[in-house]
Image: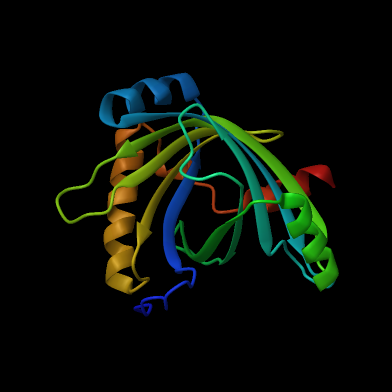
Length: 201
């Protein structure tokens, strides 16, 4: 479906089409990525999830990110999304905005009745893989999720989630996964928070 253009001052909705796979040989994968994509620096992402007490899964994320390259804007990043998995890839409608005071925002969430639900920490490196003319670039991240292991994440930001758009993005993502030397059977469709919850039980 096509999303209408946001009204002035409103936060746009993005469609995030992505996959993640286990990176069993991270150093080898890093060498390949450094040859085929443009290196964009290192990062550390610390995520906290909030949801309503009766919620079955985290519904809102607050991210603090530190990068070796300058960030686009200051403040912690708030994300909430609707998630779907289609044939091994995630197709998510996502809204993001930054807050200048995390403490004040968390106080506000508590006032609304939300509670802290989960947390995760991931560290790694990013590359940008350009597309052909008219194609969106692919964001590539090789990262270690604390308590789980190493993963490769590939992401395209699209303007809609129409079947043809998703099909074309899926083809590009799987081609890049193969180029990075990772087999399709290493795909992981569970969310990190789900995996961490299972490990902690």
